[in-house]
Image (cartoon, rainbow, N blue to C red; front, top):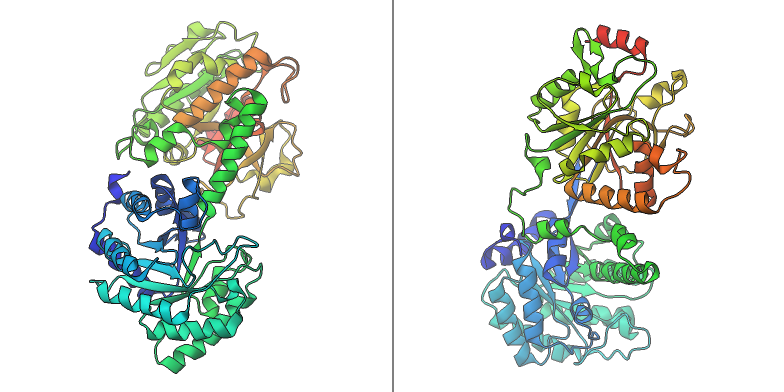
Length: 564
């Protein structure tokens, strides 16, 4: 339960009608527990400049019953349903629509209405079938519709006992489900509307929208005949290729995604359980699971401001592996001076300007020369036997709250760091989108990146995009690569946990060549990131354009002097 989602029952109850009146079309998704309600309540997606989210939540009898291990046949009693409804209301601030099945006997329905209204529910939808109903989507089940006059009386009685004008009762018409067709559906719709119902849900179980579209067209005519129009609702579970735009154009006002969260959870639970049995351990199943800390955060276990150090400038750790020797230089590269100031000093100043003070430098080659203040030093006395990955893990204790990884031979703009520490992904690589426009002029072996989506042609620094790394390494074809990895990466607390577990799994068990290296001992950072990807974990990108420079050779030093 998250306290930040609190809302008074009367305010929530009236919010759905306001949404319908203001927008004319809303989208709804099911929830069957407090946790699924948090997901439904909080999930957002940005497409272009527009943010999309669900406007309301559907408490489904199917998913409520299934989550409790029962068939959808009105077996679950009202008190059990009320408990699920309370969980959803406690964990969200959005309006709630309840699947009322048949509504039961008319007297029971009256008390059901009063209870839902008091709880802050905005709408109940009841279907015109005889009690006890059978799920409409189950092939072969006998579907018996209620006498329309009896059902209309139930609607009238429900409307008379409600106290608020904000509460809505909707009739779900099952004529297409029972095989009685369009004419019967329209006959029932007219009778229910005249009985005072607040909306109509037309249901269909065929895999095309042809039935509901025919009804929608005739519904417009019926509304003109009656002199008023009430909202029209659909549940595109089987005919799921139709878009929201097409439904809106056809005259629908509400679309309900009625069982998707439970169905997807069921699929992943089975895959996870099978994965554990196959491997006799939980490690391989981790990529299928949400991190425990993500659950803690969503259910309110962590404080509102969170304890994740990535949001608190000055607390996040930075680790700079600087132990290796480059034959092109007589000094460790991080100590090379650019216009009178060592690269490491420039890195420290840029990080300090971002509010970051906790910096760890791993030294090895000519370690006695490292005397720059403002950092913590860790020795890697095996720098000549291993590569940068093993050097990085010498600072494992500084990974606890998440960290930023920075190569020791780059100069960077502090804007890149500011953007990186505001990211909300577990593993993020900073990549340069300008690579795509000058790739044919490059004669160096670069760490190239291939992503799911191509880079934008707009040459500017942009925010973190929904784009994942597919491959990374020095042997990627230049004409295929989308980006260049600049040598800066971010790991959240969970991201750090992922790489620590994987590192020791490989250290203890891997033998022979490793990705692009001859052995795991000689693995580069990008070799390891590719292994993270191959293990099923997501690696996102922060797409940037310039604002950094890597020192490969003496020519780069001269360029850096000119730039600085």
